[in-house]
Image (cartoon, rainbow over all chains, first blue to last red):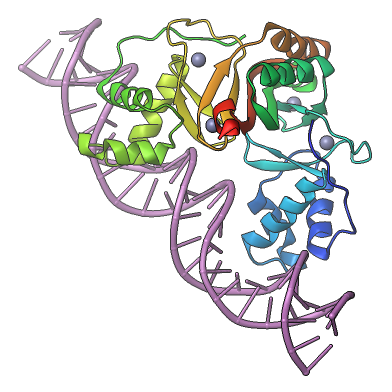
Length: 135
Length: 135
DNA sequence: ATGGCGATGTGATGTTATTACATCAACATC
DNA sequence: GATGTTGATGTAATAACATCACATCGCCAT
Ligand SMILES: [Zn+2]
Ligand SMILES: [Zn+2]
Ligand SMILES: [Zn+2]
Ligand SMILES: [Zn+2]
């Protein structure tokens, strides 16, 4: 289970980053975000990284470790994220976000059995989505 | 399920990188490896990355996406890797590698259900190991 | 007004990964 | 022996990703 700190009002920069991510159907890198936001006054990577950090804390954005990039949460209202898994299409970049109680229970179980204090879990599946497979 | 291409004789550079990783109990970054191997003639990142790429293909080394680093396989003889999960201690860096058939079956099941052609799965748990928790 | 605090702006720097191109050894074919 | 092919290697340059250090600003509570 993950903390999903409640989101206060977003700051201007956080809003800009979240909106940019929400416009996309796939993940964006921090530097792509920076480029998109230059017209809104962004000048430096840190502005992006700082906003991302908060948005991730609030559960509104997820980091995809295997891509070094970031995606808006697909379920921004369902604010109690458990363990999340992602299916990432390597052809089109589309990302599917889902949860599976059994997976969560097995991984939590392993942690309990091994006295491992779990703080964060990354589950990312890479492959080809149905659409791209068809084409 | 993952391809675990059979390993031929390792080249000199591959051997050096694998030995360096095997000496460690935790993961190393490519640049840390490079530094360790300078005395053996390594001069450039690419020498490390090329060796790592092959070692990963052979299933002798794993990449930890959430750390951008690399670790020697804990089960170098059990060469039929299915889906692998890692438990990574953020205090001491120790990495535990394990498999769980139920996790694999649930994630494969999701993929089948969504016509997602799975090519590679990353499962990484971050937290604190039993030892570090005690201390 | 003063201090604390979170957010921001900015430049420099640190870290991770790839591109491009040249070379070399091993082996097969002519 | 010359030639071509293949896989591994060497090297420099560059790209991509992330953080540090320090200054400033707005806001709110003493
Ligand atoms: Zn989400
Ligand atoms: Zn696709
Ligand atoms: Zn392994
Ligand atoms: Zn530990």
